[in-house]
Length: 631
Image (cartoon, rainbow, N blue to C red; front, side, top):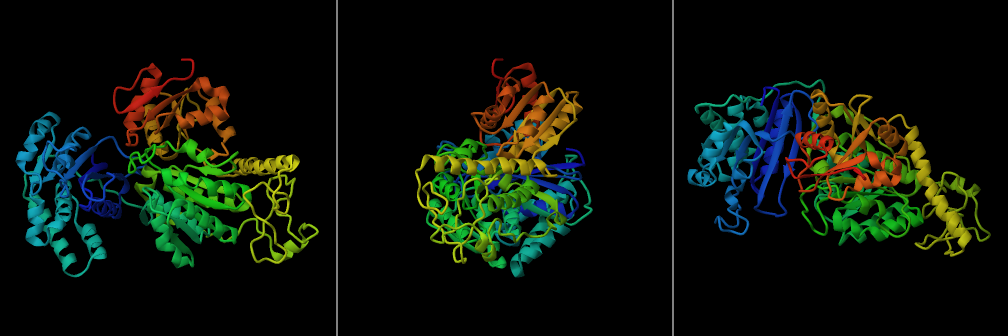
């Protein structure tokens, strides 16, 4: 590690406060002037099981996790269900130490809590030999005993932060400030006392390492947010005032943030009995004229297929979130994967008529959520935000002024009563809600209670006033009109000054890398490295999944000789979508796939790209290279 970057991990058991401690550590670094990126790894258990958070901090912007890490604070797992090495899941107390050996970079630092992991335990996992091989600098410290001496045992996390700060040459001011903001009274005083006692104790140790924290400054005030925060704030600013849902990892984060904030804006949040009810309730709210949303993950979103199809047929706007996780079925519910793409594009009955965005970072998450509401309520269809645990859970620093923009109170294509008076009605006075022939596919709608807006709404195919119809001519007219919305939306997005697709790298290059969603910024960092190493590479990150951005992707693929598609699934779903939409480029496309539950690191993409040039399988990481058809 140099003085321009820090990659720090804190590890322990679920329930040991790893997440909250890491957030405070990252926030303190941000307040000191650094740019922050965090990566969270946790098991599918409420208590116990190895969990860690990685904090990457630098004086320059950081948009991805790094390659490995340089500093480990290993607290051990105080909730280990079986301390025996013969246990089915291994000796869980020690996993927060030894499971990081493969990722700790040469010359790195290890601080471990001897109050839970004694030196005999460390010998069991060959720590001394590993440290000698890799020039690691190891500091065994009784953090538990230190915390107990000055306060309570649970405060050993604070002791660990104090030791970290001392070993890296960080001042404690920002840490004390955060403790004071979060606590009061005796708890605050005890934590500050433990922080400083640990700092002073570490100062007296012989510092054998040469690692130090970077320094930096910000031009504007910063906030530290996750993708889930950005989605929720985008929805609120888009005018969303109703959400219904049922908890399911990892969608729960966005649902919780919305639920905590909606009442401040006069909105309502409902937790219901299942995901079918959640989507149906949100659909009902939208039918009455309220901007509404729902969402889930994996199997929960599968239950929403029926109300999703109902939204398409009745042309009722709604925004849905789908937070991907490793499947099928329950799979690995706390691990990242991009394997729900086909599920989200095509689930429900009949031909799909929906918008699907896959933002790559918190800025895109905010902007594309607002766009999703705009399109859903203008074109009267479902809009879906597709993301994963990586994008939803990682924390980044961002300038607060990014969010300085006007909220949107537009109700979309809803007629006023004066406009309804002039609109077409049948002989019985019913509003012709589903007229044929609209060039852009949009028929303005009414909401219940409006004078002159009475019509029928059914999940069946219907005639112009909503009565059920199986007439072949009517079916063709209605289906083609609904599908024209997608062409109109694509034209609107293509004509916009701000594309949702992001190019990176030289304007002209021999090789291309195509990716989507949460892997974009990691790919971009890898592209920078590849070009520095003498390769000739550019990349395109795609967010518009339906309707597909044919023109932009075509132009990109035409500009390169070969293209590697990077995604986190086993079946190359985005490559398949691209070949479906742009089949003429099939012989240019190869795949780099990862589906072990861990997102790519930049070095893995560099290695995978070089393997693709040589047409060999990568020798590092759990990755798979799939060559172009016909190779």
